[in-house]
Image (cartoon, rainbow, N blue to C red; front, side):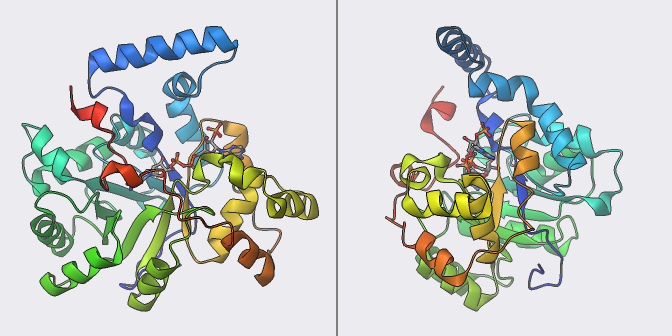
Length: 311
Ligand SMILES: NC(=O)c1ccc[n+]([C@@H]2O[C@H](COP(=O)([O-])OP(=O)(O)OC[C@H]3O[C@@H](n4cnc5c(N)ncnc54)[C@H](OP(=O)(O)O)[C@@H]3O)[C@@H](O)[C@H]2O)c1
């Protein structure tokens, strides 16, 4: 797939946002870890957060080995930028597409980086590179129009090959359009079978903006997993529910940000290129839509539950 400025972008991404809770705040980290250990003992199974914490570096390494070349991170995701930097620093830079993000919270949070420029400098250092492939505004919050202007400057300076936004709705785009020189090339939003955002997708398509789906499986919600259409399609194509969902995104021209703490799952999730859903099957999955957002009460700061910052 190509962005409107001609930059090529892979059609699936690997997301590293799961580790966002950690390292920001030591007491919170230890609290989270203790809860995870207790849960693991209670259920006699390693809790997902604990597993992720232990395996994230290995999982990111494996993701690259197994063919993921688009890596999604953000200043908000704790040590994820550093892990990506460590894992990719010996690679040919052209073989990996790296996305990172900046938010108003980052500007307020870091003493050493009060501007977008300073934040990107730190991201670049963490990522062990001198440019990113895309730099995104994480939320339309705070002084976001001016932050977007600063992101435009980074694009002009060649420190990012493309720019974009996250968690926007059409009104945000319309407002931005009046104020800017360079249209976003990418828009990252919550998108899954329970929340298909048809109007936003049509708007972005018309404007030539590529959509990336975060929360692409809708956290594997029961309403998706137990639906008749999923039961039918998993049987027909001999694929898992996750594979059907990712394929649905790809066939809709949307880049799913695949996120898993399991090496088995990450391999499985790339095995989606040997079958095609029919037009009517895509429509049936679209029909699961309930405008159900996992983030809707979160004041657009999807990646940013208050507890991370209210400490
Ligand atoms: N820009 C933003 O504001 C924003 C917001 C949120 C997220 N993001 C990005 O989007 C990424 C994805 O978000 P998310 O984690 O919320 O996505 P998600 O698709 O809702 O969650 C992934 C879930 O799917 C499961 N899964 C994946 N493959 C599977 C398989 N083959 N079989 C069974 N279960 C499977 C995972 O479990 P297992 O781990 O057990 O496989 C996990 O529970 C993040 O990492 C981040 O990079 C961006």
